[in-house]
Image (tube, rainbow, N blue to C red; front, side, top):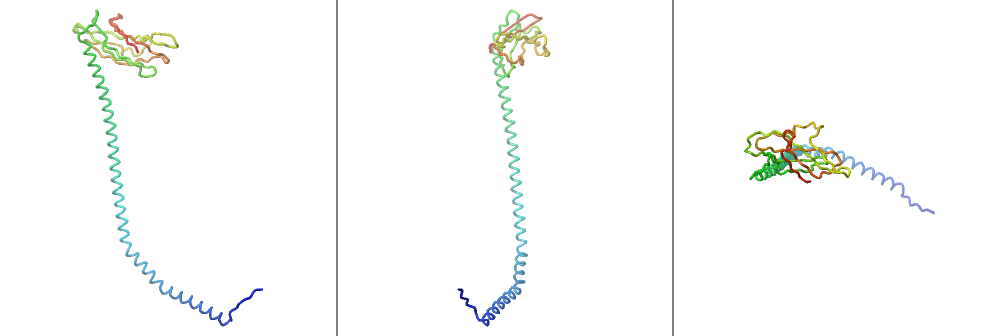
Length: 227
């Protein structure tokens, strides 16, 4: 069983009237204060707008300034990196040239006293090395004695001793199929520095190379180098 405590209806009417009156008062107060609140907010926004715009402009200018400075620094770094690469390449080239000059100097120092043999021509200090899978790089100096009384005209011939498929063989450069015969020609009065590359068949192992100086088909000088 449920017991209900109902208020007398005169009290209910009084309570409802009081609530309605309070709600009306709040509504009227809000209506009256609304323009003042809106005006205050609008006034504050109007006063703050120039300051905000000035701050935005200042921050934008600072951002652009920092961005320009960063771009300038990056450009300078790129220039310095490029300069360093160029300097490194120049140093490498100079080192290679210096090594070549030292080797040439050693060549010339070895020429004194000169012993050019019976035919007056000699090959000095052959340097040969493998620089690729099937490429033989060579450097040598050829000189003529007799105080260079005449110009020597001749050619070079290379006999390369190799091992291919387990068998020894000899490859002659230039051969009848050579298309670059001019690079083997010689013409000098005192000396001639020769440098080049021989392309070998694939799968060969080089053991030694013999260099020959020919004149009118006759061997005037020869020298061998082991690899």
